[in-house]
Image (cartoon, rainbow, N blue to C red):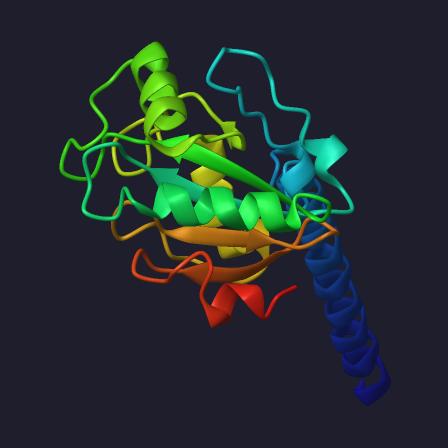
Length: 196
């Protein structure tokens, strides 16, 4: 009788374990198929972004350089940072790409269309670094780039969206997000220059 009870308990334990393993395997497989944690869109280089002329930026071509992403606006108290960004770009363009990303979500300070933004940046600041098409950061649908920049499951650690215009995100030469800087951080200040 004792031996029979042991066999029944052992059989139930084995069956329960087997059912649990099958359930976990099914769950993990469904998460992978649904784009769970192993989502293919977890690399910076997989992101899609058009330049201000509507041409797709080849993010993979940026591999091997640092990339500074900055949400920019033409009518902001920080707009003069365009000068500093241009100087930083001219000084370090052999190892740095800057992408200015116009956005009208903060105080409606970037109301212009692509041509107006492009001309403003060229005439007033001599901008030669890349400008993208306008993106949404706080309004729907949020930009894929800013979704990646603010999702720790995708970028590895950061959950902060820009708090205002001219926030900066530094991507290293391998496509990993390494730093987030608020608007007041000078593009030619120690915090950023120390990265070179």
